[in-house]
Every structure is written in structure tokens, then in C-alpha cells.
Image 1: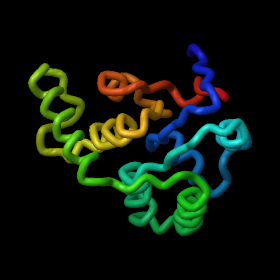
Image 2 (image 1 turned 180 degrees about the vertical axis):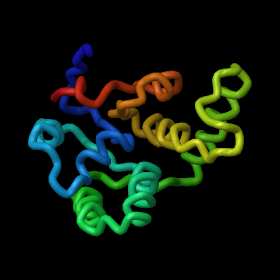
Image 3 (image 1 turned 45 degrees about the vertical axis):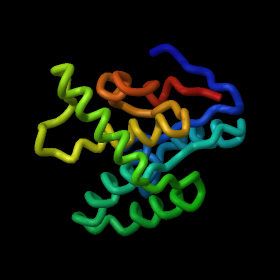
Length: 150
């Protein structure tokens, strides 16, 4: 995995993989160190509403109260990025473009949160920190989250 060192003016948007690890009631020290390293270097780290939704819905099903609290703490610590109409319009364009190219990333009946996340990342010029580089990198700059450094 090739490291991507970001300049201080850069920004990162979290996908569900790293967000879920950070929302764990006892996150691994290495995961916290990764996030803190970015923040201390002045990297803007976005917590997108669509990723919050994907993580939160599962935590609510299983009543993982501590993880929900942790997710709320992250939401107040990081730059929370609500879903906007303009993001949804761009996501619809991304979704249609992938369908036309014959390379969809989800079933046609699914909401396809990846295109919403990609639209949000595109709007702020952020690198997507993810475990799912393949799908997202077709739309925006996406890197395995562990390879992103300050």
C-alpha cells in the first residue's frame, strides 16, 4: 500500500470503514493515532452525514449505546458534512454515469451511498479515506485510509 502524504491545506472525508473503527467503544490506539496525526497537522477531516447514517443505523439495531455515544463525539469533533441538495444532484449524475458505462457499484434498487459520499468528497475536494478504493476511485480520489498520512 503506497502512502499518500497530504499537504496541510488538504482534506479527508471518512468512509464507513475507518469511521466504524473510530466509533468503536475501545478504538485501537493505532486508529486514534492515525486520526490525531491528521488533525494535529491541520488536515481537515470530514464526517459525512451519509457515512454517519450507514454506521448509526447498525449501531441502533443492536443498541450499541457506547458506540453511538462515540460516534456523536466524533460528529462534534470533526467537520460534520450534512447531505445537501447539490450533493444529491451530483450523486445522481455519478450514479447515472456509472450505469451508462456498464460499471455500477450497487444494485439499481439500492440507494448507493458510495455515490453520495463521492459527491460530497468532490464538492470539497477531499480525498476519501476508505477500505473500498475500487468503487470510489472511479469517481473521486480515494485511498486506503491507512495509507493517508500528514
